[in-house]
Image 1 (cartoon, rainbow, N blue to C red):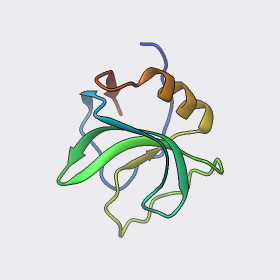
Image 2: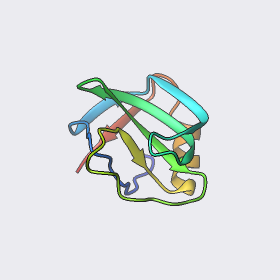
Image 3: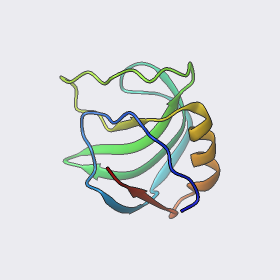
Image 4: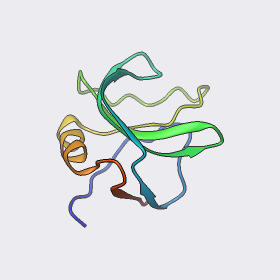
Length: 96
């Protein structure tokens, strides 16, 4: 283990386990309309792509329970650490 941190999950969660990073984006707009950075995608659940990201404004709002989204929010500091570590194919572990 190199680092652990708490996150704000979205409405669609991956099962606990080990996954490989499948894609990354430096900056995009999240499905909630908030600009996010350091997006690290690693799973898909029922057609919803799951990935870590940090809001550029530092916010970590609760997800809209009526939307099916897979964005797992982390702090900007944790997002920076994840971005440096989680290159394509790198393993990430989801726990609860």
